[in-house]
Amino acid sequence: MIQLKQIFLAYPDGESRTEVLRGLSFDVRQGEAVAISGPSGSGKSTLLSVIGTLLRPDSGEYIFDGMAMNTLNDVARTQFRNSCIGFVFQDHRLLPQFTAKENILLPTLSGQRQTTCEQEEHAEYLLQSTGIANLAHKYPERMSGGERQRVAICRALVMRPKLILADEPTGLLDAVNADRITDLLLAINDSENCTLLMVTHSERVAQKAGKVYRLQNGGIS
Image 1 (cartoon, rainbow, N blue to C red):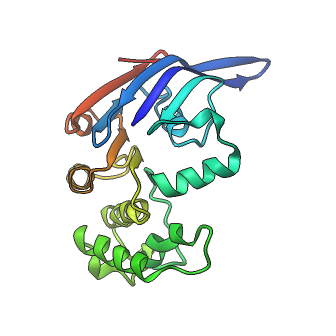
Image 2: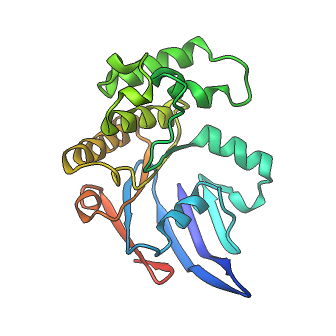
């Protein structure tokens, strides 16, 4: 599904540039659960942003499901992200003025005025299957950290993405909730046959994935 070939990316640093990704290449197959570990500042989140088309690499080739991402303009990249990728972040990024269900349905409003009945039903199914149906009409401030992250996972899944990108999804959780969220993501990866790519600094979380890559010095192994 994912092919990265000789990806280079550098950030401006004063009058020079700091290389973050240096000729990085790796593949991820459809349905795999992959963890990317590495030291802080090694470029894990940058790599996820490249795969999620939030950042363009300076050079190299990125192919997703046979489609060359380098050839897409900004509008096409936005459409691709909304239809093919579900994002889960460390800080959940729920909007406080919306209930759990309303937060989950937000991606469905991109490009349309109203959520469809099918999307409503899917949101309710996700709430039920992740064990938070009782939170549907609650606001984020009334939820625990683990509950907020479950809502964020449902939001990532509502558009039935082919790929879930999880950036330190357990970073702000205690060990018990970290295990629960990791196990939930892996269960979804299995039941929905969607690909899971998870960045984590936790070796415990990483070892639960089917495959672990380590990112260091701009390369991956």
